[in-house]
Amino acid sequence: MAEELSSLDDAELERRVADVRERMRPVEQQLLALRGERDLLLTERRRRDRNAHRESRADLKAAMREGKFPTVAELVAGSQAGSLEDYAFNLKTGGEVRLGYPGARSQSLSFTDGVQVAQAGDLAAAARLYAAGWELGGPGRPGVRVNFPGTRQERLVSADEVFARPRAPGTA
Image 1 (cartoon, one colour):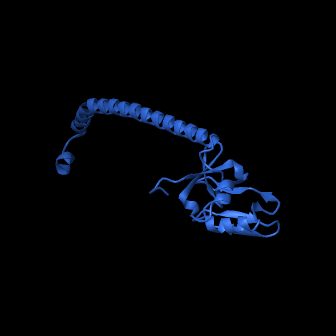
Image 2: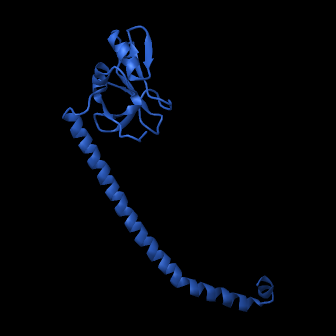
Image 3: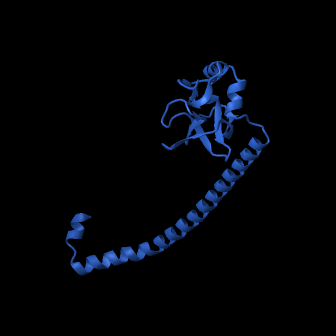
């Protein structure tokens, strides 16, 4: 085909290009219509996802207000064993957080006796420190260090503002 095209004069080549463009025009219009239809469907999917997320967050906040989920302070005070990874943690506003420092492989809680700081990587260690009179937080900085999944953003919040709910089996 390339050899055949090299023998064509400029006028014939332009005619063929115009012919191909003319045959492409209905296909391009059809493609444009299909893309518009696809975008409309994707917009509806995003709207439904946003509504489902908003409703689940509202349900979670209602459950937290009703006392269905313990705060981190209540969890530490009432647990003797278990992994922090068995729980999903949410702020009282409903946003999901992880305990400890951003980028850490596993969640942890900081405890202080007023001078020293110790990290608890599971509920058994947290229960031992709590039973020994240690408080959540660091010297002069009571609270729980939380970070927002997928970000480097962290903050220190009151232990009564972070709620623990059992994580669904098979989710990480």
